[in-house]
Length: 186
Image (cartoon, rainbow, N blue to C red):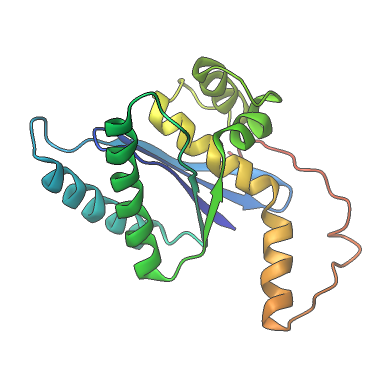
């Protein structure tokens, strides 16, 4: 299962793509989308929409995951973040790819073991879990962490989708009780 994680923002939007191969999670790609400096908000949002649509078309994820909005310190910042998140959701919804939403605490807990972990801890654990040569930038690390969080629950999601489609709702013996092993296949 190929999973795209997004960490939306109007100045920097991180993306991270992982693929679950059996019990392993493999790093595919990550990066940060940065609209041209000094652009007006509508132009930055249009840039994000185009770039997210391009990534979705090129990478063909089977599932996308995006963090829920948290209560920020500034009302203005929260509104702008909401607009960037809305653009990301619209780009994804236009493709028909399923969307999963997770809280920042769920992501931190899944990757570091603590729902209150610092950004630097998330970056370090993402690098370690995916055996990356370098620590990913903060926004890309957050997106990869969201994708990893979802990958841990990917088998459950796949089983639910098969059940909803009426195809084999019971897990096979090999699907029950498997632990997630995160490593890079080289």
